[in-house]
Image 1: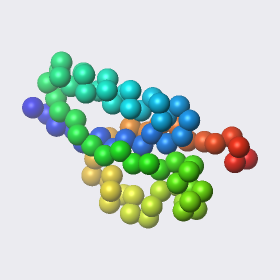
Image 2: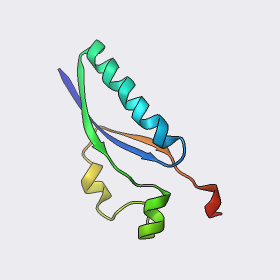
Image 3: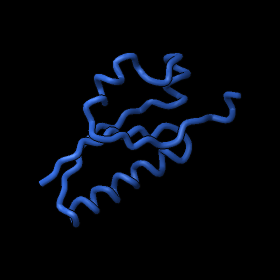
Image 4: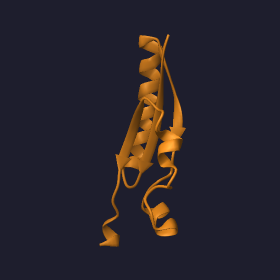
Length: 81
């Protein structure tokens, strides 16, 4: 069985709604096509930026750099303009 590691970053706006649903679809597809997905979900978004003054921690690549793919949601907060 093929195994894939996915890093999920929902981020902001619709990403918080869409990425979890997308992961559900991916899990459902995995059972039909016989592959396995596992991964990490990271909360790096505009709220994180306001708290830490950076979009991602310095060790982001150590945390998700060895995944096979990154499932990235949307980023942006119109009120911050």
